[in-house]
Amino acid sequence: MPLISVVICTYNREKYIGNVLESIKNQSLPASKYEVIVIDNNSTDRSADIIKSFLDANTSLPFQYYLEKKQGLSHARNAGIEHSKSRIICFIDDDAIAGPDFLEKTVSFFDKHPDAGAVGGKVIPRFTDGEPVWLSRYVRKLVSEIDFGPKMHILKGRRYPFGANMSFRSEVFNKYGKFNPELGRKGKNLMGGEEKDMFDRMKSGGENIYYDPEIPVWHIIDPMRLTEDYLRRFCRGVGVSERVRLKEQGAVPYLLKWTENKAKRAGSLALGTLFYLKGQPAKARMIIDVMRWIEEGYDDTSVEV
View 1: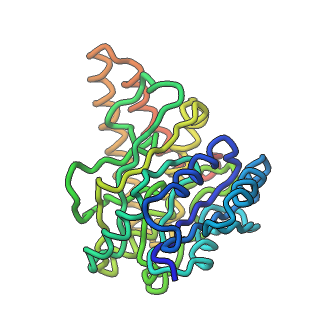
View 2: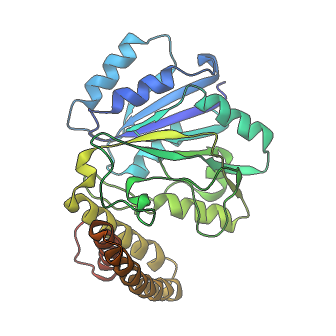
């Protein structure tokens, strides 16, 4: 019986899927103590061929390949949960890279913290074309960066791990259900919110969700993800996801978020003005645009993401 199951969900990531497979292959944790479950969510590029070639070349390793025909990241993640056989389920993105002691440290963390329902570590962006000039600390989530400080701690309030690097005790999915298929990416659609929804359910049930900076991954940022078109769709996807998620909870949470968005929009205009005055117009514009795009996704049911 493996100690930890690694679930890698992929959709059209032929450029990077080989990197994550190699990084999980080269772990300090013995291969007998982990399994890797690769879920292909109907890729139309060469991703499947690359994965199958990797598996053919590494038949002694515990890697498994499955095709999930129901489109959507939540469906793919839920398929990974169903195929897993261990007490810990770790999710890592198909364009991320794990260090050689990633799995060993994750297993050790859960052994040392029996109260933990989940843990997430740092997500460190790795830019293939250099860091964009518009990037400031206020919008670093656009590149999926997570850094909650140098010390391990329980995440309170609205802080959560990111999907590029999150691990759970398998029992939590029996207690709180799996990822909501109404949320999350579906093909080229950039909706999200399924991770936040899962962690919200866990927090409501009293589960402790930790951050441990000693369990990082490096997240490759393709230049396509830094284009204005992608960023606009990404932010609108955030807004749409929040609208869908909160509508299920009733009118009060929905209206509270609507009010919060208006306040954040005003704050982004003030902060953007400061950056303009400091002679950093690219940073100023992105701070303002991000909140405007999120608000558009939340308010307008006709928005495409």
